[in-house]
Length: 473
Image 1 (tube, rainbow, N blue to C red):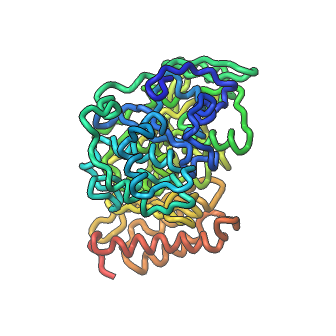
Image 2 (image 1 turned 90 degrees about the vertical axis):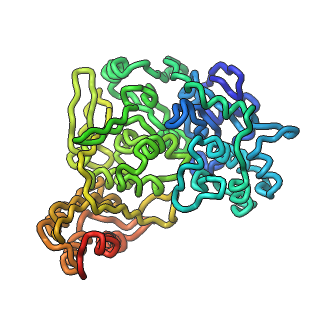
Image 3 (image 1 turned 90 degrees about the horizontal axis):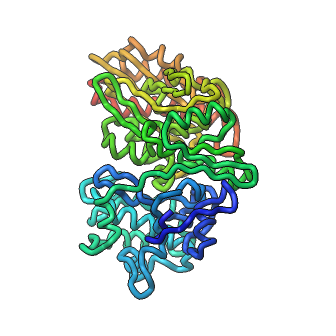
């Protein structure tokens, strides 16, 4: 591993040693542990990753979630590597002069996330979420970083004040060279192993030989399990950088998304090509999490409140599995079999997700949660509806948070199809949608509230799409 430009051999004490602990053991104590679950950003660091505009991009990730071994052969930059007290980095200088730091606990994390956006090659060509500064800085690049004492206004001022990298900025010049290839890794300690195969074929062979292996992609879920619940995998198989799982292709029939592409990579490479996914991404955790999280991981964990499954259900997506003895494809509607369980067989990996084309013209994703961003949903509903001459020709609705698995709202779809897209039709369908699933009472919401929100989501979709669909109330 290269840390702040210096070759640093990886010799963790255990396979589950996090990048954060590894860095701190080497005296780089700027990154802190706050929440240990990727929600506060105090641990943020920069890593060099393949870019969508330049060969390399500096990407901010949560060091508290990532195993140090996952960065074998990679390049890492911490807040200490950005600048010094005598020669601060431009983002560090702006944070200082604009009062963006009081206690300083969260500051290194903010600085690293801010630096990732500072170096984003297309910073002036995009305008995300309507919260972009005059310098092109997307304020959502700082999502997932929490400040408990300074207040966000001076941090925002610092973000909107940074200029352009200087011509001799080494980190900016680094973007023009290829990102490092992942190193094949085989490390064992205390009877536990961490293995990063070089090819998909090797990964499938290892998975066949170790059917109980823990498959690691972005580690945004497994990292939490390790930190907060003490989960220790006997055999970890890292697949996040396998080229075969990182392809994105588009043809006349559909879009295929590699299971190991991060959500940020998918978002930028699709560039709005799938509007329903464009609605999902800003509401899926934080930018720090999206920089590591994958669709394969989101489906693999099988959570009933994962944000991606309802959207993919509405898009009629299918899951492509790979195994040593061949491949197969399963409709996502048939994928989930129970709470955190699926049809994935021992020895299989999720290789990709396929979305058929054309897309339905009326679509929407509604996430009901206690916070606007960076929260777990109480209910998530995705719609994809094809309306022709005022008639609903096809309706697909995916729902999360109301059953042991994400579900398709088949009964509601049946009420809508071949019916006029009118207020009366929608009112009838909304009543049916309110009865879909088996919602429970918990600390996030009551069953009654969840049911009510299902119906209200459809009414909201109708209110937002009456004129565009040529419909009269």
